[in-house]
Image (cartoon, rainbow, N blue to C red; front, side):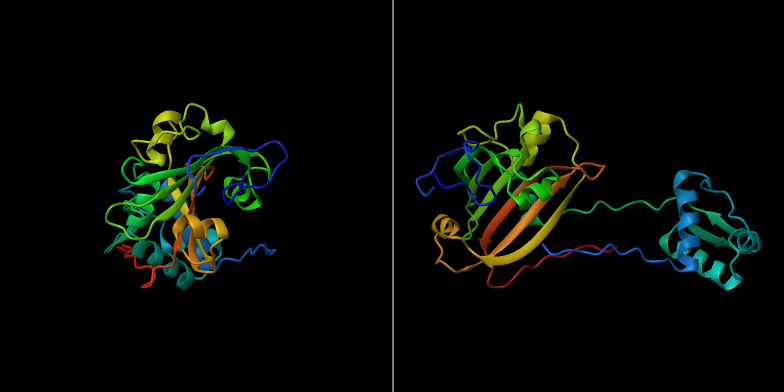
Length: 270
């Protein structure tokens, strides 16, 4: 039986069950040396964030900061102006600079396509292709920060919402140790999104998602499942869902034809 893309072939380890008949480059670390004003700004920002300089208090004077950091007055002024622009401090005429505290962080919502991939219910919008355990490939292991070949539970669906003419091959990968209590291995369609199911069953608090985009030709299996010609370019989106410490919890591997118009997303900056 052919394993879903993203799995490594292992001897006697795969337990994938099909439910559908269609069934690096080395990098050198970079350690930049911060400009003097940036180092000063970072230190002051940290003190404000940790409460050492509380909201409503006055910052040390320019002369005091010049003496503390051994910097010129112009460098200190540049650091203070940077913090003012970020909303951490404000100048008070004749008194100095008052601490405002950490600025509120705006909640950033992922693009609609990512939200749907993470949270769309399977019932009414998906066909289950395969589910079960198999050894992780190098790519999936790297995304989950686990050893290559370690067993994962995968659930591969063909997602085709009614308002979309572009089905997506959507595979969820979860480390075996984190999949207990979930129905990711089961043949029935989920009435909730995969991420909602994971959060509810495991009571994990997810914090963010990292997306890695690439383009490559579809495999023979993908071409069959997506009804594409062999050699068609596919847009591959790897979504890594993490907790507050940056630990990967689960991965979504999305494959669909490259949209003729490309990707179009709007991101709020302010």
